[in-house]
Image 1: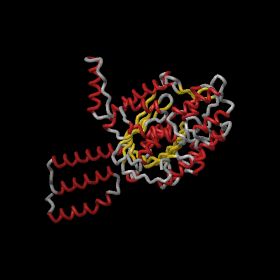
Image 2: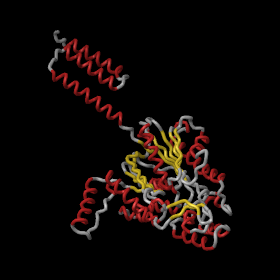
Image 3: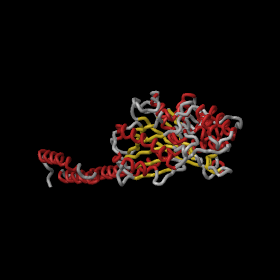
Image 4: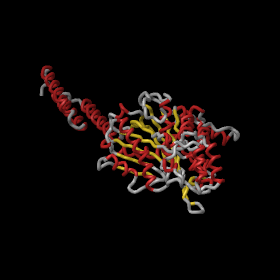
Length: 471
C-alpha cells in the first residue's frame, strides 16, 4: 500500500479533530482506546511499520489507563464548607452569685457542697457570663426527660438554621447527618428529631453518637470524613452538643460536683462535602485525621466515670488520676501524629536526642519536636485551665497559642464536644487565620480517647457573621 499524500493526510487529520469532541462523550478508557485505534490506522496508512512507533503508542496507552485508574481509586478531598456556633440568650446567663445563691436554696446540697462548688467556680477560669439551660435555673433544677428534649431543641435547631442559611442549602441537600451528645440518648434519637423537624429526605444516612465524651465533636467529623470517602458527591452535617439538664448532680460527693460548676451550654454545626464545587466555597480542607484511645487501661478508663453515689444519685466522677491519664494518652497520640505530619528534620532531632539520653548522657534533655513547623493554630480541649496548660507545656506552646482555648473557657465555660468550634470562631473573629494556614483540632474525651483533625485554610476568612457568638 502506497503512503497517503499530504493532502489525504490533512483530510484524515481534520476528520480526527472533528470526531474528538464526540469521543469525549465516552468514558475515559474508551476514549483512550479510540485514540490508539486512530493513530494505529494512521501508522498503517503511512506505512510506518517500525516496531518503535507501535511500542511507544502502546506504552502511552497503558500509562494513561494506569494513571486513570489510580486517580479514580483515590477518594475526593473532604472540605469543611462552614460551621456555626450557638449563643444562648441572655436570660440563661448564670453569674457566680446567682449560681451559689440557687445552690444554697436546693435542699439536696449541704453547706459543705455549696462551699466546694463556690471554690471550684472561682478557680475554674470561667467568667460571670456563662450559660445554663432554663431547666437548671429552676429551684430545684428540672432534670426530667421532657426538659432535656426542650434543651436539645433549644440548642440544635438554631445551629442547624444558621448553618443552612450561611451555606445557602436546603435540608433536602443533606445526604449524611451525624448528631453527637454524650449524656443524653433519647428514643427516637436526636438525629431523628432533626430529620423530623426539617422534613429531610428518606434516604439520608443518619447517625447518633453517645457516651463519647468531649471528643465526640471531632470523632463525628472523622466519621463524616470516612463516609464521604466511600460516597461520592455528598454533603454531611455534624451537630455537636451536650445536654446539661440530664447530667446535673444533686448529691454531696465532691468529685461529682465538678460537672455542675464547669460545664455550660453550647452547640455547633459543621458542614462537610466532597463535591467538586465545594473547593471554591469552603473555608477549610480536612487534610489529616487520627484517632487513638486508652480504654484498655483501667486508670484511663475510670479517670472520668459516670456512676451512682452511695445514695443512688447518678453523677460523673472526675478522679484524681485524670491529669496523669490524660498526659499518658496525649503522649502516645502526639507521638503517632508527629510521625505522620512532622517534617523529617524534627523527627530526626527527636530520635537522636532519645538515643543520646539512653546511650551517652542520661542527664541530657529529650528534644521536643515543634508542631509549629507544620501547624499555625491550635484548638485545644477547654476542659479547664490545668488541662490547657498541661497540653501547652507538652507541646511548647506560648500564651498566644492557647489564648483561644482559655478565652473560650472564660467566656462560655466547658462546652464539651462543641468547644473547638468556638475556639476556631475566636481565631477567625480576631483575623488570625490566613489562606494556607493549618489548624490542629485536638479532641479529648472520656475513655480516654483522642481524635485529631488537621485543617488547611483555603481562602481568606472575612468574619462578618452577625450571629457569631464572638461578635
